Image (tube, rainbow, N blue to C red; front, top):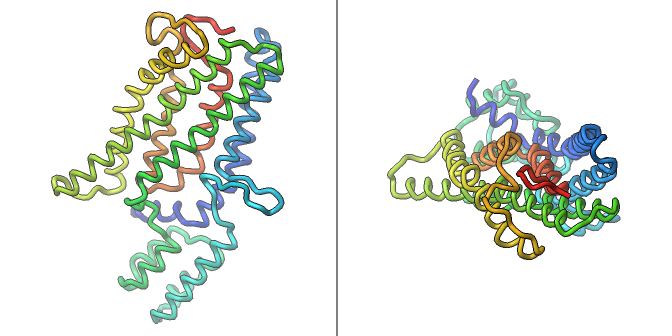
Length: 340
């Protein structure tokens, strides 16, 4: 079985639609479990942790859902989301029209092929179905037009940089939601202070710049460099897998290596003065990279996969970004300076 066949299978519109539909339930459930476990872990040293977690997890999840799905009130769309998907009915209707048009233009005598061609009208194609259609259908414009609907190539090169902007905005939403929820939680529990608020904003900076934004900048620079090399025929056009590793190289150089440095520097030079905080000596005295931060860069691998044309990864991103939002909400600091 070819890798391209497997990629086409998981990137079918109906498969993506079903994955996207399950994302809110999975996000709410995982967020709730995360909050309960954290509350239990801190049951002895923070009696108000449960209330804080309820507000922080709730605000982060709500912000993430609004950012991905948008907001509709009484049938009226207030604003669009960054990960909206068609209804299954619309997808099936569009696929039915594409199949009917193809069969009007091309005569197919093979009954097995005809049977497989009717499947996109009611369900998704199997791996065997995709391999059959790819190999047996005549190579012409009609086939290309059909595949653009039922087996689309989601790695449109001209849209890669637009995708980076969208994914960066998607990562910012739960971080902002977490910060606002954390500030509200402090007010509600009587633990609010300038230092706690500053810590939340600084952790938000850390999560966004070190774990999200600068990694996307690195991806953009890597893609731009690869495009220039291809333009001047220094290298051949990259396959999706080659593109994936090129993007990961940019993410590593800009985000993973330089992200924490830049985030901490901005926190000390911008946020501390705004809140009247004295910055301790040493860039990593309050926030240094740790194992979970490295694990959170799994979202960068997911981002690289999306930019390389593996669209099925996208529904997982909100869950990964949720953790960044939660950590911003509690104002996480792991250095020598103790939190209030």
